[in-house]
Amino acid sequence: MSDETAGVGAPASTESAGAERTVKLCVRLMDEVNFPLRDLVRFQGELTAYIIQAVESVDLLKVPLVVIRDVKAKDTTIRVPEAVHRRLAELGKERSASVNVLINTAVAHWLEGQQKKRVRKKRQWLTLKVETAD
Image 1 (tube, rainbow, N blue to C red):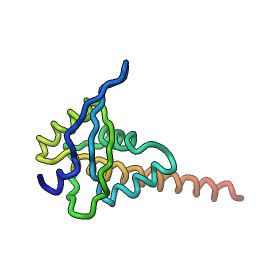
Image 2 (image 1 turned 90 degrees about the vertical axis):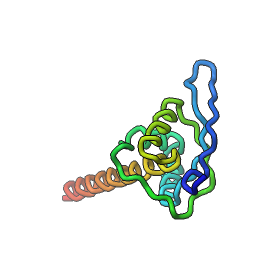
Image 3 (image 1 turned 60 degrees about the vertical axis):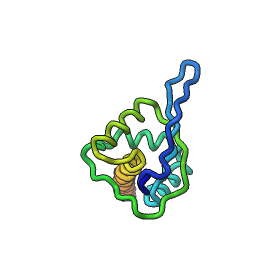
Image 4 (image 1 turned 45 degrees about the vertical axis):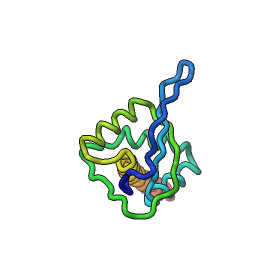
Protein backbone atom coordinates (compact mmCIF):
# COMPACT_ATOMS: atom_id res chain seq x y z
CA MET A 1 0.00 0.00 0.00
CA SER A 2 1.43 3.39 -0.96
CA ASP A 3 1.61 6.39 1.34
CA GLU A 4 -1.27 7.92 -0.58
CA THR A 5 -3.61 5.03 0.15
CA ALA A 6 -2.52 4.51 3.75
CA GLY A 7 -5.34 5.57 5.99
CA VAL A 8 -8.14 4.59 3.65
CA GLY A 9 -9.62 1.58 5.38
CA ALA A 10 -11.97 -0.98 3.95
CA PRO A 11 -15.41 0.62 3.82
CA ALA A 12 -18.08 -0.71 6.12
CA SER A 13 -21.71 -0.28 5.03
CA THR A 14 -24.41 0.48 7.55
CA GLU A 15 -28.14 0.96 7.29
CA SER A 16 -30.68 2.38 9.72
CA ALA A 17 -34.42 1.94 9.47
CA GLY A 18 -35.55 4.21 6.64
CA ALA A 19 -32.16 5.89 6.35
CA GLU A 20 -29.88 5.98 3.34
CA ARG A 21 -27.10 3.37 3.35
CA THR A 22 -23.75 4.86 4.23
CA VAL A 23 -20.15 3.77 3.95
CA LYS A 24 -17.72 4.33 6.80
CA LEU A 25 -14.36 5.58 5.48
CA CYS A 26 -11.11 6.23 7.27
CA VAL A 27 -9.35 9.14 5.52
CA ARG A 28 -6.11 10.98 6.21
CA LEU A 29 -6.40 14.65 5.39
CA MET A 30 -3.36 16.70 4.51
CA ASP A 31 -2.57 19.36 7.10
CA GLU A 32 -3.18 22.00 4.41
CA VAL A 33 -6.85 20.99 4.22
CA ASN A 34 -7.32 19.52 7.70
CA PHE A 35 -6.65 22.70 9.69
CA PRO A 36 -8.85 25.09 7.64
CA LEU A 37 -11.62 22.48 7.45
CA ARG A 38 -11.58 21.99 11.22
CA ASP A 39 -11.61 25.76 11.73
CA LEU A 40 -14.75 25.88 9.60
CA VAL A 41 -16.29 23.06 11.63
CA ARG A 42 -15.46 24.74 14.92
CA PHE A 43 -17.52 27.76 13.93
CA GLN A 44 -20.22 26.44 11.61
CA GLY A 45 -20.94 22.75 11.24
CA GLU A 46 -19.99 19.14 10.85
CA LEU A 47 -16.83 17.78 9.21
CA THR A 48 -18.50 14.97 7.25
CA ALA A 49 -21.10 17.32 5.79
CA TYR A 50 -18.36 19.64 4.50
CA ILE A 51 -16.41 16.74 3.01
CA ILE A 52 -19.51 15.40 1.24
CA GLN A 53 -20.32 18.90 -0.03
CA ALA A 54 -16.77 19.20 -1.35
CA VAL A 55 -16.86 15.81 -3.09
CA GLU A 56 -20.23 16.58 -4.67
CA SER A 57 -19.40 20.11 -5.82
CA VAL A 58 -15.86 19.74 -7.21
CA ASP A 59 -15.43 18.23 -10.68
CA LEU A 60 -12.93 15.53 -9.74
CA LEU A 61 -12.52 14.52 -13.39
CA LYS A 62 -11.10 17.92 -14.34
CA VAL A 63 -9.34 19.51 -11.37
CA PRO A 64 -5.65 18.81 -10.73
CA LEU A 65 -5.13 16.13 -8.11
CA VAL A 66 -3.26 17.04 -4.96
CA VAL A 67 0.06 15.35 -4.33
CA ILE A 68 0.29 14.02 -0.82
CA ARG A 69 3.88 14.30 0.35
CA ASP A 70 3.52 16.34 3.50
CA VAL A 71 2.40 15.39 6.95
CA LYS A 72 -1.14 14.11 7.17
CA ALA A 73 -3.45 14.28 10.15
CA LYS A 74 -4.32 11.15 12.04
CA ASP A 75 -7.11 9.03 10.62
CA THR A 76 -10.50 10.69 10.46
CA THR A 77 -13.60 8.51 10.22
CA ILE A 78 -16.47 9.81 8.13
CA ARG A 79 -19.72 8.26 6.90
CA VAL A 80 -20.67 8.98 3.31
CA PRO A 81 -23.67 7.80 1.30
CA GLU A 82 -22.98 4.64 -0.71
CA ALA A 83 -23.58 6.58 -3.93
CA VAL A 84 -20.80 9.03 -3.03
CA HIS A 85 -18.44 6.15 -2.20
CA ARG A 86 -19.25 4.39 -5.51
CA ARG A 87 -18.59 7.63 -7.40
CA LEU A 88 -15.26 8.09 -5.61
CA ALA A 89 -14.25 4.49 -6.36
CA GLU A 90 -15.14 4.90 -10.06
CA LEU A 91 -13.31 8.22 -10.30
CA GLY A 92 -10.33 6.64 -8.54
CA LYS A 93 -10.13 3.97 -11.22
CA GLU A 94 -10.49 6.54 -14.01
CA ARG A 95 -7.83 8.84 -12.58
CA SER A 96 -5.60 6.12 -11.07
CA ALA A 97 -5.94 7.75 -7.67
CA SER A 98 -6.94 6.58 -4.22
CA VAL A 99 -10.18 7.63 -2.54
CA ASN A 100 -8.00 9.44 -0.01
CA VAL A 101 -6.34 11.54 -2.73
CA LEU A 102 -9.72 12.31 -4.28
CA ILE A 103 -11.18 13.43 -0.95
CA ASN A 104 -8.14 15.61 -0.21
CA THR A 105 -8.37 17.06 -3.74
CA ALA A 106 -12.08 17.82 -3.39
CA VAL A 107 -11.64 19.47 0.01
CA ALA A 108 -8.62 21.52 -1.15
CA HIS A 109 -10.47 22.91 -4.19
CA TRP A 110 -13.70 23.40 -2.22
CA LEU A 111 -11.89 25.31 0.54
CA GLU A 112 -10.25 27.51 -2.06
CA GLY A 113 -13.69 28.35 -3.45
CA GLN A 114 -15.06 29.01 0.04
CA GLN A 115 -12.18 31.33 0.80
CA LYS A 116 -12.83 33.32 -2.39
CA LYS A 117 -16.53 33.61 -1.48
CA ARG A 118 -15.69 34.88 2.02
CA VAL A 119 -13.28 37.46 0.63
CA ARG A 120 -15.94 38.66 -1.84
CA LYS A 121 -18.53 38.92 0.95
CA LYS A 122 -16.07 40.87 3.13
CA ARG A 123 -15.36 43.26 0.28
CA GLN A 124 -19.10 43.79 -0.28
CA TRP A 125 -19.60 44.44 3.42
CA LEU A 126 -16.66 46.85 3.51
CA THR A 127 -17.94 48.60 0.40
CA LEU A 128 -21.43 48.91 1.89
CA LYS A 129 -20.01 50.22 5.15
CA VAL A 130 -17.95 52.83 3.33
CA GLU A 131 -20.90 53.86 1.16
CA THR A 132 -23.24 54.29 4.13
CA ALA A 133 -20.68 56.03 6.38
CA ASP A 134 -21.57 59.54 5.10
